[in-house]
Image 1 (spheres, helix red, strand yellow):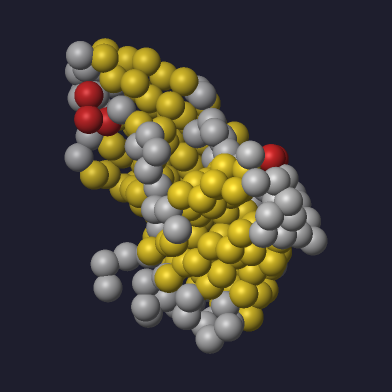
Image 2 (tube, chains in turn blue, yellow; image 1 turned 180 degrees about the vertical axis):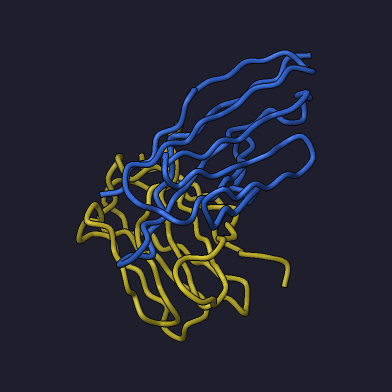
Length: 112
Length: 116
């Protein structure tokens, strides 16, 4: 069964620094999603990655997908305080299910 | 239509009581999902509807949980004989009709359940 792991689970970083969140999944998946969640709020869609080598960027966030390595990354460039949130990746198996499996999340805190 | 809506937003109940939550998806979305999220964890899949058909259900979902989507529009999630372990945020999401597998999901604000 598909499993999704994220690391790190917690990340505290200074404003202006760069960092990467990693998302590994255990079985074949051709769709990878990134979401943001603020405390007490629901999930906001950030990126949908649909093919090997896909790269998407929005502001200071860039996501990529390597289906051969079963790895997606979310790169943060020159972090600002407003990026403080919990980030989740989710994957779905290639066939036979519409289920999405979420990672446990990375809680990001950007310090001024 | 501004997004997925869920009601109520908060629910406090006593152990053993039944509760029902409602989700109204984005109107043109034919796919609807229910998730449960506990503190510090990612959303956990509960069930999936395509139109009015419940096509997938988590093995973790006990017999006390039931979901419906009678006309392929709104959905309800009922928990019977609630237990303290049912305390969680219940999230609904919808996604549009599309070729192939799952598309991007749009989440509602959630219903926070506390079982005393």
